[in-house]
Image 1 (cartoon, rainbow, N blue to C red):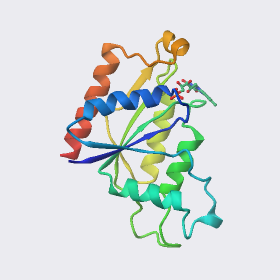
Image 2 (cartoon, protein in one colour; image 1 turned 90 degrees about the horizontal axis):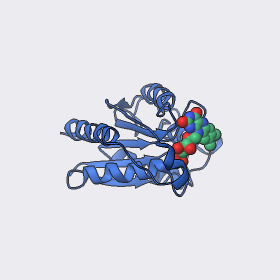
Image 3 (spheres, rainbow, N blue to C red; image 1 turned 90 degrees about the vertical axis):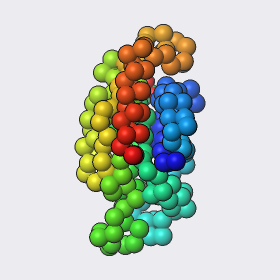
Image 4 (tube, rainbow, N blue to C red; image 1 turned 60 degrees about the horizontal axis):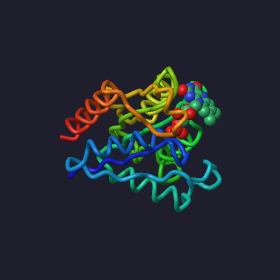
Length: 182
Ligand SMILES: Cc1cc2nc3c(=O)[nH]c(=O)nc-3n(C[C@H](O)[C@H](O)[C@H](O)COP(=O)(O)O)c2cc1C
């Protein structure tokens, strides 16, 4: 079975995006092996500490390299992506050997699906900028993406609820990913 690595761009315990990832995981059940990448302890990028890379970073690169696709679920922070996610992708974009820009990185050519749950804009700004960043680091962004504008009651309960339309959009995205993996 193909391997899909989930990355959640929020550290919040009750993260809506983590809950969205749970729904997507159910949709992929029996059709892909889903694993989650924990990015909570990834150190801040520091070029003085790149070679050899910190252990957490090596582990993360190995997991990404071995995955057939990555699926990111992320909130939008100030119309963009969270710094945590940028830091993660910056690490993934760097060569394994100093000065070696010829060997592909673990993220180059990787299919990356994007989903986000947030306010009224449904993380559109975040996903647009993330698409730009991922394209820059040579990942292949899968279409369609899914944006969820959270229902007002979600903010009070911390429980993600999805409309039929939002669930259908996520399902369509899951199908597109399965089709892409072949
Ligand atoms: C620094 C910061 C900036 C934010 N900016 C936005 C924003 O531009 N658009 C938006 O929809 N939500 C924004 N939010 C709200 C969160 O993205 C929102 O609560 C989201 O649902 C949290 O996702 P999570 O439950 O997965 O942590 C911001 C939150 C923080 C902490």
